[in-house]
Amino acid sequence: MSEDSKHKASMEKLKEKVDSHIEAADIERGVAVLLTGNGKGKSSSAFGMVMRALGYGQKVAVIQFIKGQQLSGEEMYIKNHCSDVYFYQMGTGFTWNTQDRTGDIKAAEDTWVHAEKVLQDEQYDLVVLDELTYMIGYKYLDEQKILNAISHRPEHQSIIVTGRGGGSAIREVVDTVSEIQDIKHAFKAGIKARKGVDY
Ligand code: ATP
Ligand code: MG
Image 1 (cartoon, rainbow, N blue to C red):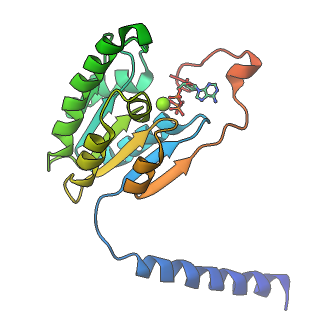
Image 2 (image 1 turned 120 degrees about the vertical axis):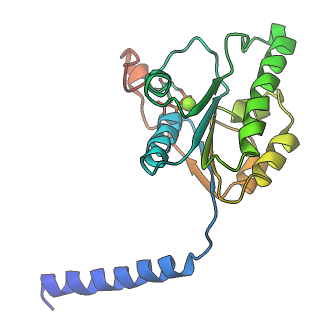
């Protein structure tokens, strides 16, 4: 067999396999995705999917469990150009400071109110819960409450959770888990965080 026909035969076999997988996947519902691991690319991947959803005219909500001071390109873009995206950030009340655990818990719970609201709202097709895993890890939010809200969301709604760690229960509840590995990062070679790439 020539190289060309060998290639053709193996491509045909591959296509058959892919087609059979496509045919087997016949369940139509929203998916829950967890993007975790120590490598760079979790939140920016979530915002990539925000862009995809918006391209189809879908309704999107983004809830960020981060400090309010860290301005980012995605925040500016959404605020300036996507007035129909529900956007909420935990805000400056949050300190990641164990000395003000009570204040941190209050900020996390205030933010969770927004998450819970959109997770019950049929009109949202995609909900991003950025850096939510830390709230579970630090026990700032009740894990069971989070898992329930994710499990009972509208059937067509997809969600994306980002952040390192988060434990095994959330991995069970979601449909897709990707762990981004940290092979190397520019910052460790002394290169400053870059607008448009890092924030
Ligand atoms: P991104 O928002 O770029 O997708 P991320 O969500 O995966 O990153 P976070 O832990 O939320 O990661 O941190 C965001 C910031 O920290 C970004 O500026 C990112 O470049 C930087 N960062 C992410 N991972 C690493 C790492 N392994 N080493 C150093 N800096 C990192
Ligand atoms: Mg992130």
